[in-house]
Length: 130
Image (cartoon, rainbow, N blue to C red; front, side, top):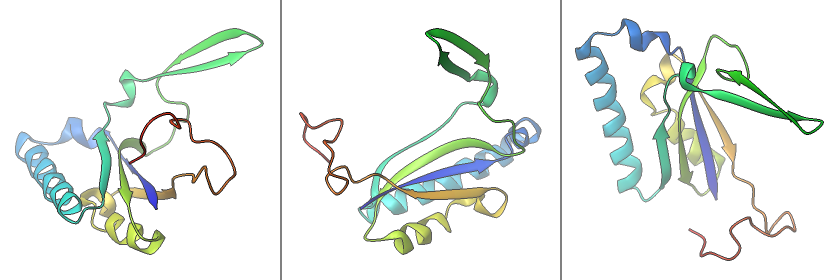
């Protein structure tokens, strides 16, 4: 069963962090990433650029509305994600507890939709599934 782990935190810490602190954080993520890969749970994952690089698009009555930045204004921003293959949500939560920034931000753990169980065709039905 696949789970999406969404990593939220205060991105302003990156502007205030020393090069040594940034390296310490990146090293901690490398250790975590290696652990989930070695355990066979890793499916995908990426860090995201700052929200200042984001655009939000809405289409209303056929008209495109483009806004700079993220959709929601919050104190914590989406900073990255992992997709893990776990036996259940408890295993996914166990991995989430090991993510380096969980002590300062939060990790949302959400099951990836099982299209077959929902009676729908998967979007990539013409391709092999992981």
